[in-house]
Image 1: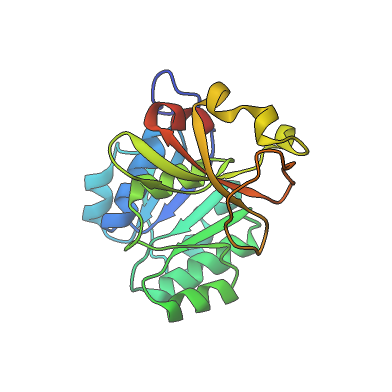
Image 2 (image 1 turned 90 degrees about the vertical axis):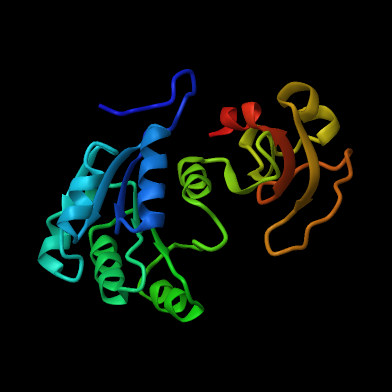
Amino acid sequence: VLCGVRGIKMMKKSIAVLGLGKYGRSLAENLYLMGADVLAVDSDEKVVNDFSGKCTSVVQANMENEEEVAALGLKNMDIVVSCTGTNIAAAIMSVAVAKEQGVPLIVAKASTDRTASILRKIGVDKILDPEGEGGMRSARILLSSSFKDFWEIDDNLYVVELNVREEWIGKTLIELQLRKKHMMNVVALKGKGKNWRFGNPEEQLKEDEILLVAMEKKDLRKWQ
């Protein structure tokens, strides 16, 4: 049974969080509270026992062991997140098995550029920066089909990178009336590989563009 937030429509995704250090625990717990089906894995029996009941299932496994990682059933996951910290051997094995099993999105925590480079070479799609983002922020990004990134300005106001939705393509900001209809203020926009710029309200939006918008917390939840 999934534990969701009442009144908020969440995307139901199956996510494996491998490694339950401080960041991994925060990520797994927030993903679960936001409605995801979460498999949490760690090699430490005490950590696994302490985390029991805080997500869909918690399993003990040696993530340096190929057979134990393969037995986790990662092929059934929409997303696999490696949070094994400084244990690069466990991270490499986890990512390699997830890649072989055809996981659509493979994500990994990396504390150094060197580690990030190695993980990208073996198939990681996205690197998480634990110094720059908390578990809740990472959880929202992973669960959303709309968000590219977002920043919490205070307890109520957020600035969000938002993908241009299909129904917005070819329309202008004047036509869309995003502030009136969706309570979001467009700060800037950019095309793929280009710099941020202030948008012309009469300019038609393109498929590959990203909007930088400001919105309140209550409105942010509508876009997950």
